[in-house]
Amino acid sequence: MVSPRSARSPYLLRNSAAIRLVLKEGRRVSCPLFTLLYRRNALAHTRVGVVVGKKLGGAVWRNRSKRRFRELARLSLPRLSAGLDLLILPKRESVIEPAEYLRESWKALLARAKLLAPGGTP
Image 1 (cartoon, one colour):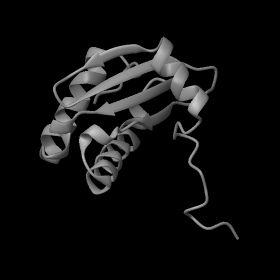
Image 2 (cartoon, helix red, strand yellow):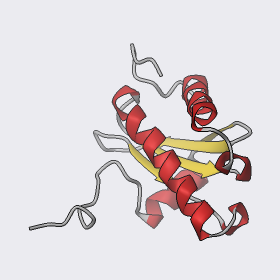
Image 3 (cartoon, helix red, strand yellow):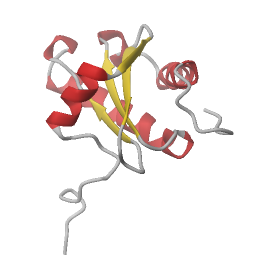
Image 4 (cartoon, one colour):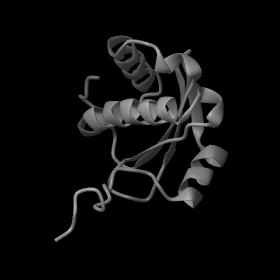
């Protein structure tokens, strides 16, 4: 039996080569709370990665930030266009912002980058 923690989700972008490719070739949109890089992939589904540097804070703050952004991405997956690699780079301000403000910024940035599927609302 496979434990839930060892099962890898297909929507997570964990491959370092793929992350470097998005960093190098991806398009970039920003807001005061985070930067979003995106690039088309050859897959039928969208993958999401979160990269948090030590400048953001200690391990507790970095892990909290990753959890918050992964949850935002997970909730948005059905409305995102297929075949994308998304990379989220949180900024220090995102850690202390309320979840509602973070969610609104996320929706606005997805709409601005035109990453939502046709007919998909944030």
